[in-house]
Amino acid sequence: MVEEKEPVSPVMADLREMDLTSAVAVAGHPLHAMSVHFPIALVIGTLGIDVLYWFWGDPFFLRAGVWSAGFAFAFGVAAALVGTAELLLVKGIRSRVGSWTHAVAAMTLLAIAGTNWGLRLVAPEEVLPHGLALSVLASIFTGIAGWHGGKLVFDHGVGLMVSPDE
Ligand code: HEM
Image (cartoon, protein in one colour):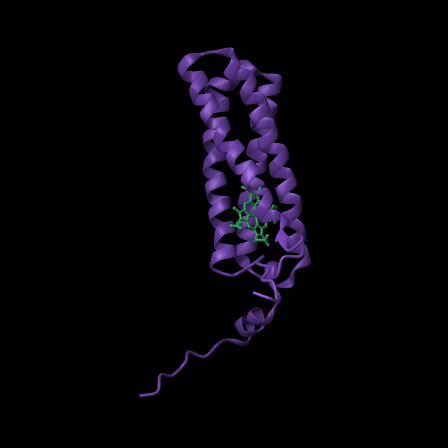
């Protein structure tokens, strides 16, 4: 028996034809995928530092938290600039709803990470409980943004660069 294929809508057919290749890469290595590890590690690291400060109360962790939160925000902004370039430059990326969902989650994460750093600069005495709460929220949004980013790569095949010889 011959299986009948489901009809594909013209919109989906058009979408499948669009280019998905990363536009911001160095020697065939997409920059966004390379840069996202830093904000992810630093946001989660800041949460770890806050928990240690809560536990031991050592001011060392307060100082470490300012730097960790600051670099989490700075590296997040850098990753977001590259991600935004991908989104705007590649038609197959900007035409996918998932790309915008990821961008909104990532921008929310950056707003929380920036607030977390600012709080530590101007009111270090507020780290417990407000800084800790912001670190928990930032970690949750890192998970949401990262999960949607991963879906773009692994489900949609966005941002890949397959060398012609392989
Ligand atoms: C407005 C800001 C952002 C935009 C528009 C954006 C856009 C994208 C796009 C288009 C991809 C698909 C791969 C590619 O084309 O490079 C992607 C992947 C990804 N993004 Fe973002 N991104 C943004 C910010 C961030 C931030 C701040 C993080 C860090 C939490 C992040 C985490 C990821 C992850 C984990 C992937 C999957 C990478 C992989 O597995 O190789 N993105 N993003």
